[in-house]
Length: 546
Image 1: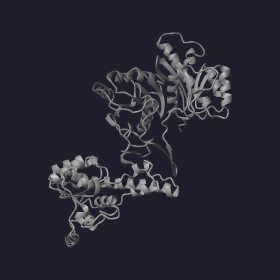
Image 2: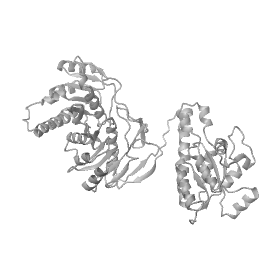
Image 3: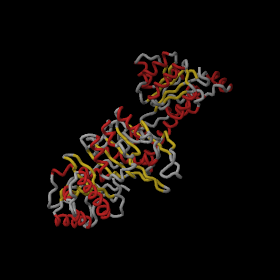
Image 4: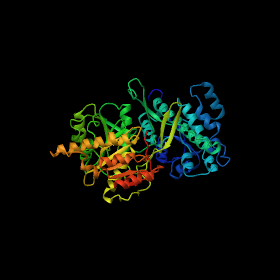
């Protein structure tokens, strides 16, 4: 037996989450462990043929007050808290007829689920567990002698350890389980605090719970320290849950840009698609018939900015897609999966390329699954919390004399999805580069005014990309405004406060615009569109991104 291992001879099992508990209890019983239990757990074990002793029979005191008091008894807490190598504790146990309890398997009443389901205050309070946290904290405190199990996911590992160590649990495992137990009760108490603070005091309380922090080499800049904390409760494909398959460790900037790339590409999860992100802006964004085609189209949106970028795609990367990156410097590639030959190719391409597997992306149609419902932003001395921006638009209202053609609808939705992920003031120029396939061809981001985002950035980049397309086809480049501008769709993340952006759009030859609307001067903006024959749609939903 491992030095410091504690043999398990008596276990107390009382769980709210009963997943796997019958098999775990049956395994303990087969090893000769005496099992104590209460209430519904006791009945479940007994009904399934597991030998079990009811706690009230063990203590000699019945459950009272509708079950509110059942495990709060010296024979329970004395058996858990006794220091086994303290002669005075041992003597008092003998005098009081208290036997040691070597393992406590307890998880708590589902308080969060109860209040999330719309329960009233009385029901919520009845779901505040008292005996459970007391037993969990007692056994975690006394982990030198007691193993505490609060998560059904640990049943398998604990069972394997008992088998490997002759029915004992090692000291290292007891320490790990104790930390997990204190995290369990801490999160539980935080949920109760938040609920009652809101109900009784009308105060919004924010208590953060993030574990498994990874120390990073440095933060945004080399002189800043950084740690990446993860919320294990979020099951959605994310940077926190992704698996690093190759390349250097992730940096702070990789994680931030990777999150931006992944969130942007989730909007296009219905199709093979790619987002190319630099400094949290999608400089490339495209759909394709294949991942390779989407990657090539996204890269072409801004070949200069794409150097040293972070890329996310919606489908598994095959060898064809991997070869699109030949000769191109990429910091991080994120995908649901990678074929074996693609993974080998990418590892040989660059030892430093970070390769991240997320598993299947949920979402598409503008509705990514939202496990993490809030977004937090720290400011000096405080924290801001807001709901996650999961929607794309709330209406699709044609407001101009020139009707928005049906064949531009899909491109307009694509442009709006792209614009949602660009830093404000954001302008997107989107192009249907092949039938049914779309890409960003020009983007303006992070400007103090929307006119500059369009005129100085988006139009300039789109014209540059169109000239490059002519060069690839060995065709003469047209003088003045390229005729392709008349087929683009322009999207804005917020309304136009004046008609000046419409004047600039018309000067560039743009004929289709998507924007939220809502300005006091909407009528002037619509009037300007009508004067130029521009078709415009109001979406009713702003997407500022600071």
